[in-house]
Each structure stands twice: as C-alpha cells, then as structure tokens.
Amino acid sequence: MSTSVLYSLTVLIWGSSWLAIHFQIGVVPPEIAIVYRFVLASTLLFVWCLARGISLRIASRHHPYLALLGLSLFSLNYLLFYYAAFGLATGLLAVIFSTMTVMNIFNSALFLKHRIQKKTIVAVLFGLTGMGLVFWPEIAASQAQAAGAIGMSLIATYLASIGNIVSARNQKHGISVASANAIGMAYGVLFLFVFSILSGTPFVIDTDIRFIGSLLFLALFASAIAFGCYLTLVGRIGPENAAYATVLFPIVALALSTWFESYVWQGRTLVGVSLVLIGNVVVLARPSTVARLKGLVSKHP
Image (tube, rainbow, N blue to C red; front, side, top):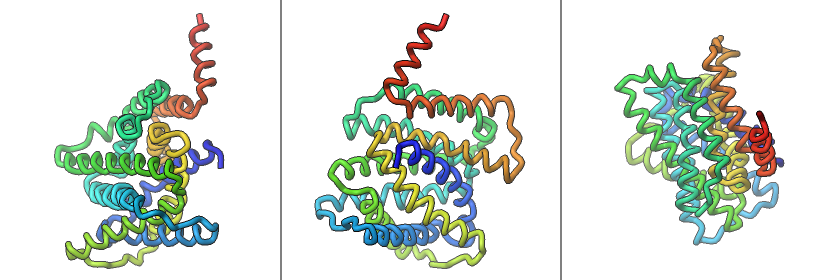
C-alpha cells in the first residue's frame, strides 16, 4: 500500500475516532471500555496474522519492548485520554494530541539518532500555527479547572510518542507491524485488566447502540486498521514525519462538525486549515520536490 494511501486512511479514521470516544464516556468506566476495545482489536489482529501466515513467534528478548508498546500506546495513554475527556471537549483533546509531532521529532533524535529534517520543522510550524488559529476560541475558553485534564492529555500524548519510537525499534528488528500490534495490544489489555481488578472497577457493559457502535468502530477501524497503517508509516517515513498526521485529525473533526453540527467556518478557520494543508504537502513531499519549490520561491521577483 502506498504511503499516501496509508497516510489518508490514518487521518480519516483517527480524525473520526475522537467523536467515537465521546460515546464511550458514561456508563462504562474508561479502563473497562478500553479493555473491551483492545480485546476485540487484538483478537482481530491475531486472526488476521494466522489467516495471512504472519508469524506470531517473536524471540523473548523482544517481548519487553512489546510490553512497553502495549503500556505506552495501547493502555495507559488511552486511559489518561478517556479520563481527560470528562473535563475537555474531544476536539481540544485532538488539538493537544497534535503536539506529538514536536515530541516525535525530539524523541526520534534522542532515542533513534534520527537527523531532524528541516522540512519537518517547517511543516510542524505551519501545522501547529494553523491549529492554533482554528481552535483558538476553544483554547482560550479553557478554564483553570481544566488544567488537570490538559496535563493528563499531554502526558498521554508523550506516552504515545514513546510508543511510536518503540514501534520503529521493533520494525528495525524485523518484527511485523501486525504481529507486534496484536501482541502489544494483548499486553495493554493485561495491564488494564490487572489495574481494574486491583482498583475494584466493575466490569459493566452499556447496551446503548451508540456505545456498541462506537466500540466496534474503535476496535476494528481505529485500532486494528488505523494503528497498522500509522505504525507502518512510522517504519517507512520515520516517527517525526508520520506524526504530522495527528495535526490533520482535528481538521477531519471540523468537517464532521460542519456536516453533523452545523459548524460555521470563519476567516481564521480558513487560514488555519490552509496552513495545515501546506504543512501536509511539505511533510509528504519528496526532497526533490521540496528543492524545486525552494527554487521557484527563490526565482520569484
């Protein structure tokens, strides 16, 4: 599958998932909702691996990294995000999550010794500036009592960034994305299951169609499929470039809001979205394309 297709699927699916998370908050405790989500997603991936002949036998020396992948990317980060959703709008959570682009740049340089590309920095500046313009009213309206939720969201985002680095490491050691995700999600479920038992959290289920529907969407599309697409990108173009997809998530959320909630676009919104799209072109462009663009700019009178 081409890089552009992987990128587009990641953005479209995860951009929609924030709305689905909203329907998970309520009757079922967050940790239990996440357990249900990743039990389903992990099962689907195990079946997929078996059907496709993808080996699930991974050397024991790699399992600590698979467990770290589960803890950082498939359990603790989501637990923090779900709890933060009680105090913040999911749109603002998506904005905070987009800061993973910056975190991945520095974590890639620190842990993977990746050279920071100038085009990535330029893209991030365009993207975060654009997101600031689009969501400034929501950011400015955040009350002091929301500070805890913002803090949890930032920690959750950093954990997700660590998960990106771990996935890149696993792929460099020849571990397939599908098998690593299947086992990593199983580890994540184990962590949350133990946490739920120790904390006395009740295992309940919400039979409301919105909860069941959003759960199935999150398990199949947002977890089994989108994580496969995204982490393949991490291995192919690097964590720092792949993470720019997170800047586009809130744009998809805006589009859904326009369709379902009659969101009204304003001048700053259009400017902000334009900046995000420019950053998107820069981060996906080949070096030769970026060089040609620079040449055109330098020749412009």
